[in-house]
Length: 108
Image 1: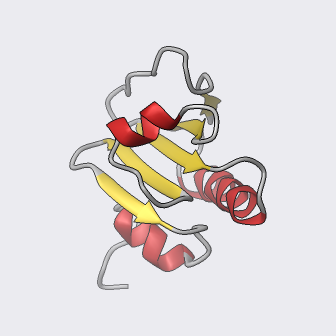
Image 2: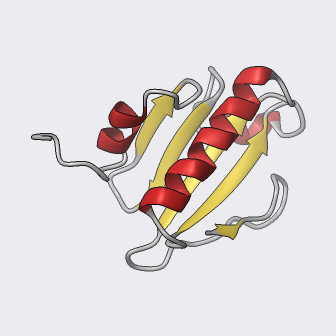
Image 3: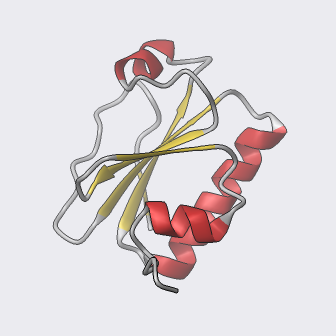
């Protein structure tokens, strides 16, 4: 798993087969920390280095939240592969997050 630059820097472009995930948080609050931890764990277990996580702190970069239509945090955007998906919350409901990110078959 590679780390993307923090907000305010250039955004990474996804390679084929690579997931580009954008996590919006507010500061170091408990839900922000939990969402970040849950996302990194999920990526380690299911994407094995095939993802880039961009973490954007809305307190420091509010225009990025507006640009991405984010009004609630934590919020995760699956930027690539398309179609784009938005998941709200601290990402604790792993089966639902995996389904949303198309990493789990809905029949399971």
